[in-house]
Image (cartoon, rainbow, N blue to C red; front, side):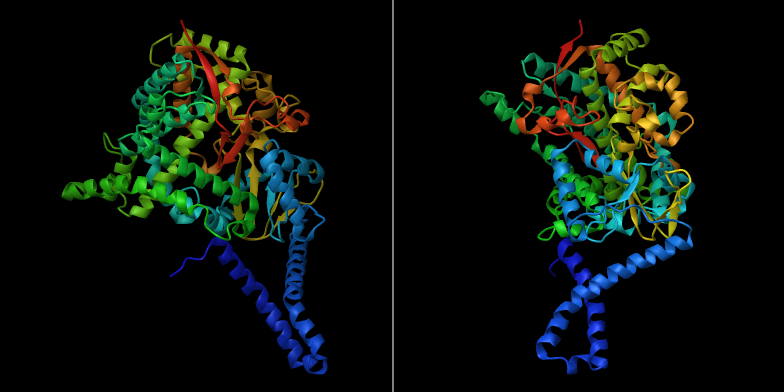
Length: 595
C-alpha cells in the first residue's frame, strides 16, 4: 500500500473538514428548493462557491467561538499578526525569507516589539503562537504542568525522527521513559570521567596534528566527534570512533592525494551523523510552520531518507544488546526492583534491555538520549570556543583559573570542576546567549489562560489543543530581564551583583536545561563533560583565533547584518538551528599550543 506524503495527508484531512460543511450547505439549499428555482449558471456558481464559502464560515465561526470562550474565562485573545494577504501568506513568506537571510530570531523580535511578548502568527488560519515571557514558560513547565503537554501536534511533527521517546511522549509513557533513564544519572555515574578523558586526549592530539600541518580546524566538527564518541560509549559501551577518521578540511585547502584519500575513509559513522543532522533540520523547519508544515512536504517526507541511514546504524547495535540480554537466561530474570537498579559496568543500553526488549522503544530512547547527550553539549562547547576567540581576556582569565586549580597536565576531578566558579560562569553565559535548544513547544489539553505580560491587562486566552512555542534565546537576551548589557558576553553577570538583581528573584529567565518535572536529567552530566573538555583544552592551548578565511563564503554573516540590532553587527558566524543550535559552515579556528 502506497504511503501518503505528509502534504497529501494534510490536504485529505482539510478536504474532509471543508467538503463536509460545503456538502451540508448544498443539501440545505436543495431541501428548500433554492437550486430548482435558480438558473443553471447560478446553480453552478453556487456549487463552485460552496467550498470556499463553507471554509470562510468555518474559520469565522471558530474565531467567534474563541472570543466567546475567552470572555467566559475573563481573558483576551493572543494579539495576532495582520498580514495583507489572505491567510497571512505574506507573513509566512517573510518569515521563511528572514529565517534564511537574517540574524536568528530577528523577525520574531521585530514582531514582539510591535505586538508584545506573545503573539499569534496565524499561518493559513492555523494558530502559531510564540512567546518569550518567563511567566508563560513557568506556567507551561511548572505551575500548570498537567495542562501543558507535548501533545498530538508536536508528536506528528517529530515522530518520524524521535519516535515515541522521552522528548515527545506524555503521561504514563513519559513517566516510563523517565524512570528507565533516571537511575543512570546518579552522582557516581556523572562524576566518572574515564570516558571523557580518553576521547578528550584523542581529540586534542588530532587537533594538534592538523594545526601543525598548517591547516585550521573546524572546532564544531572536532567537538561533535568528541561528544558522539563519548555518547556512544556511554550508551553502548563501544564508541563510534569518529575521532579516528580525518577531520574536515577548509573549503579552499589544496589537499595532497594522500590527504584526499584519508578524507574518504571512515564514512559509515559520518554518514550517520550527517543524516541525523539533516533529519533534525527538517524537524526544526516543521516546528517553525506550526500545524501547516505538511504543506511544505507535498512530494516527500523529508525525514525518510536520512532516517533510513540512522536506523541502519542503530539497528545492529540494538539487536546485539537484545541478543546479549537473551543469552543471560535465568541470570537476566530479575525482579522489578533489581531491574531498575544499574548494575556494575552497565551501559545505558544494557540497563534499558533489562526493562524492555522492544526494538522500537529501545531505538527511540537511544536516539532521544543521544540528542540530549551529544548535540546539546557539542553546540555549547562550539559556542564557548567562539567566545574564547572573540574575547581573549576571558580565555586568559579562565586559563589562569585552570592552571591555578588543576595545573598544566593533571586530570581534573569532580571537586575541581565544582569549585571553578569562573568556568561555570562562562558556560552559563554561553548558554544564555546561545542556548543549545533555542525554541521549544507545549500544547494545551483544555481552554486555559496565561498571565498578561502587561500589568493590569486581562490574561491571555489559549484554546484547547493549541501549540505554543517559547523561545529561550529571545528570553535570555531581553534587556528588561537581564539589564541594558544583555546582548554582551560577560560571564561576570553570573558572579557579581547582577546575579542577585536579575536572576535570583526570577529564576525562570534562565532555562538552558528546561524546568519543572521535565527538567533535563543530564544537566550535571553535561556541565561535567563541557567543563572537563574546556579544562583539557586550556591546559594544551594558550590562544584561539577565528579562521574566517577558512569559512565558506556562503557561511559568512551577510553584509546587511552590520545594520542590524543586538549582536548581529558584531557576530563572526551565522547561528542556525536544527532542533539544537549550530554554526552554519562550521566554527573554523587556529589554536596556539601552550608552552
